[in-house]
Image 1 (tube, rainbow, N blue to C red):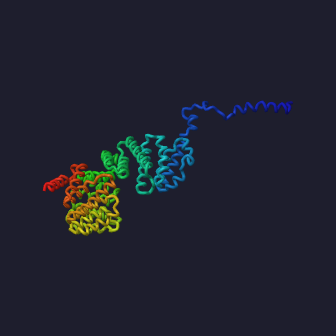
Image 2: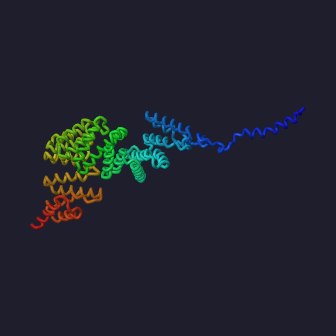
Image 3: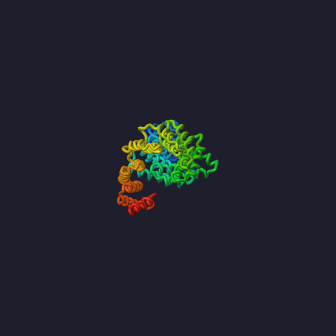
Length: 459
C-alpha cells in the first residue's frame, strides 16, 4: 500500500520535468524553413505592415478626392503618434507625402516641408519626393507673393534655395520632365524676376513634351497642361526679347492646343496675341485680338487690355477710339501707364493742356515710375516752347531717378541739356551733355545735341 506521503513525493519530482518539456521560451535558431522564417514573423515589413499602409493611403486618397484636407491632417499627423507601427516598419513615407500635400492645400507650408524633408533624407533619389518638396517650397513663395502667408528676408532666400535645389535634383532624376521645368521657370520669372534665366526652362519644357511620342504623351497627359502654360510664358519672354516672329508662332500654338481646355485664361491668351500683333505692326489684328480679350473677361474690360487697345488705335490714327478704350477704365483706378497713353491720345489731337492735366494728376500717386511721367511733361512743354518748364521737369526726373535707383537718368540729362541750350544757357547745356557722354557715349541724339552746342559756342 502506497502512502499519501510517497504519492506526493512522486508528483513533486515529476513537475519540474514536465515544465521543462513544455517551455515556450524557444531559440529562434530552432526555426530554419526556406518558406517562412522567424525573421519573417517579426519583420517590420511583413504583410501586415503593408496592408496597414495600403489601408491608410487608400483612406487618405478618398479624403483627398473630397478635398477633406483638415481631416487628413487631424487623423494622421503626427505620424509618430498616429501610425507608430508604420514608422517602426519604415513604411511611413507615402503617408507623410500625402499629409504634406494636404498641409500645402491648407497653406501650412512649414510643417509640410518638414514632413517632406524626412522623406528626402530617407530616399534622396526619389523623384516624386523631390518634386513634391520643390513644389511645396515654390507654392509657399507664391502664397507669400499673394500675401496669403508671410515669408520675407533670410527665410525667403532659404526657401528659394530649397525650391531650386529640389527642382534641379528632380530634373536630374528625370531629364524629360515637363512640369518641373515649367515650375522652376515660374520660380525664376514670377518670384525672382529673372526672365532671362527662366526662358531656357520654358523652352526645355516645350521641347520635352514635343519630343515625346504620341503614346508617351497619352500616358503623361497630366503634363500637357504645363506644356501649354509653358508655350504661353515662352511667347511672352520671346516678345520681351524682341523675337516677335517666334512669339507669334508660340502663342498661336498655345491658342490652338488650349482651345477646348482653357488652361490659360482666354483674356490672357488673346491679350498675348494682341501684344505680339501690335509689335509686328499688325494693328488691325491687334485690335481684333484685344477686343476679344476684353469680351472674354468675366470681370469686364481689363486695364492692361484696354490700354494696349488704345495704343493700337493711336497707331491707326484713331485718337477718338483710343480715348474711348481708356474710358472703359474708371478714372479713379487708372494706373500711371494708362494715364501715359491717355495723355498721348490727347497730345495726338494737340490738346496739350488736357494731356498735362492728366499727367500731373498721377504724379503724387506714382512712387516707381514718376520719371516717365515727368519726361512726358518735359516733351509737351518743349513743344509749347516753354523751355524753362521743360528743363524743370527734366531736372525733377533726373533727381527722382537718382534718388530711387541710384543711377544717372540718361533721357533726363539729354532733355535738360537741350532745354538749357534753348534758353541760351550754353555752358550749362554743355556740362549736362558731357555728363551724359561720360555715362553713355552712344545715347541717341547725344551727338546732335553736342553739335548744336558747338554751333552756339562758335557764333
